[in-house]
Length: 346
Image: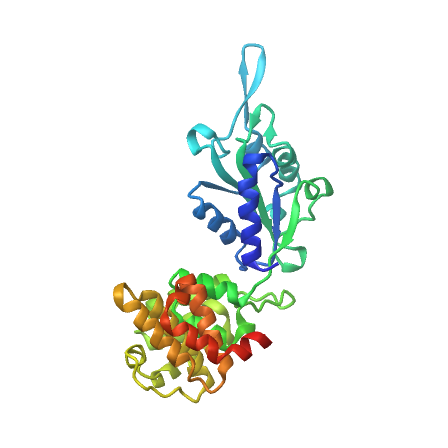
């Protein structure tokens, strides 16, 4: 399932704790596709704490607690990492990450916690959601088969990669527009993992964020940049990205486009993707009274692409980035009318 849909499911599962309808959710997927990030986004949207417990690093006693003697009885000290309404808040998310990498004894300790929301005398606060994530057995990670009693305590979803969802996230999180443009140009490289070859570095949503950081650090060190990009996303994808970035010195004058001047659209497809991504980034950074004029000029430029689908992609990404404010820009109606046949056919 695509990340945008999974976000909505997890968001509703979080809200459902107030009505007693919450079902623990298990997210499956290969490394680097953003499983934990989706959970973190839900927590951030509600400004609520997320307790991230890596079960692969736990012993059974880490969950159950440590026994101590009280007169003639043995009681258990509740681990401080488990949710507590007084210390952490009445609402929150308990995230059990790397659950398929946990030894069977740790998984068994988690059974009662997940289904009954308790361990011994300890109870998870009512308004805390339980989410978990792990790799599949074919992903070449350290994984154990999830026991049937544990699996039956979750609803299960597989996380797919989806370029539009990643692009919307990337614009919202300040990812370099050159990375976004490159992946629009080479969408199959958003995630390219072959467990049969057991690669060390490979393209994934997570590693493209690393490549973004590499561009910020080494753009002024050309002798180091290519090796850095390869270290992030793998040898082949790193070479392609480096060549793409090097070609961008032929970009048209973006300031002239934003000012409404008649700037030709480049004939090279890779440059068209680069211009589109850069213009969306400029629209995001446009502030104040000049923003509608700048966005209107971007819409006018979108209508000049020889392949009108490229202009539609630009405006679609623009909408994902700035939201429904786009519809209030005077030039939007003219642009939509000009491409109505494409939008209807699509």
